[in-house]
Amino acid sequence: FCKIVKGELKSQKVYEDENVIAFLDINPIHKGHTLVISKKHYDNIYEIPEEELAKLIVVVKKVAIAIKKLGADGVNIVQNNDEAAGQRVFHIHFHVVPRYHGDKIKIDTIEDRTRYKDEAEMRDYAEKIRRFLV
Figure 1 (cartoon, rainbow, N blue to C red):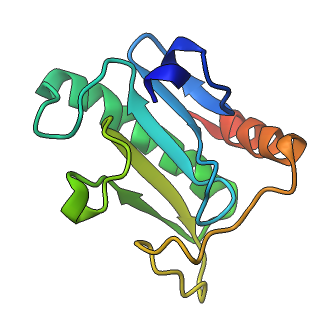
Figure 2: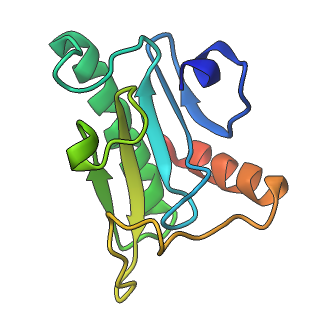
Figure 3: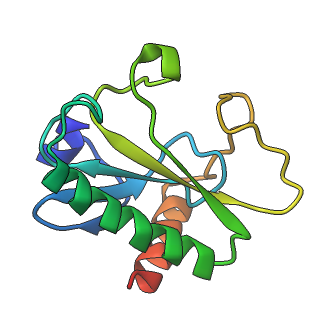
């Protein structure tokens, strides 16, 4: 994620300010699944100062509202800490996952993931979310 913050890795950003960046997950549970990360590196919730965490959660809420306005029936907000809890990338981040009635997705499995057909579709989803950010 540090490479995304530095611009060394490409991402479809939906939000960015001086402290936080939000971008589409490349392995989404549903299209629109967004990751919200701190631009400063902290491995997990244990390390991040409360004032930095507050900045993150404000953006998480904005993204959740935007995804809901796009038509999701609800959202899961997930934040994993340590390998035993499913953390795969050791840079604090929140998942904002669109959910739909009857989708039967198990949030913690990798098997139920979807794919964007191409980069253009991914850009389109990022733009839709940006339009609804409050």
